[in-house]
Image (tube, rainbow, N blue to C red; front, side, top):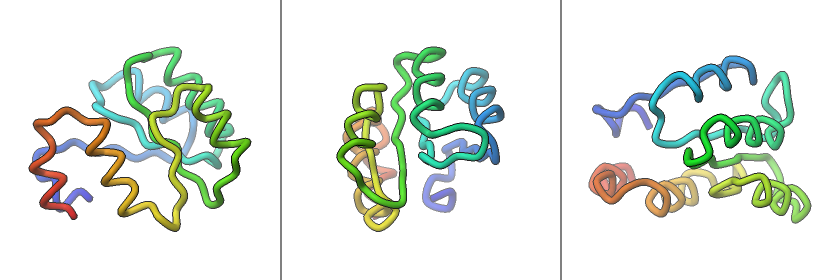
Length: 111
């Protein structure tokens, strides 16, 4: 995605602690969190991010869809719950729905 968004700032981390520091320290427009992030469960990470930055949209990604996990993610404040199998198309759709209108042109270029 970095190639399609030359003016966007992307960050990546290998641990839950680093992700929490990043999400609270920078002015992110959105966070994409894996449910099986090393260091903590994705739902717990989602709750920590929402506690620190309630208005920050968070997309939770996972390998397999389960109704239980989707319900827990929604109750914890996830903006979307996406499986890896449909991630590219569904991720762009979620980004279009969540991010401000000013980013629509950039998302059109990515699809």
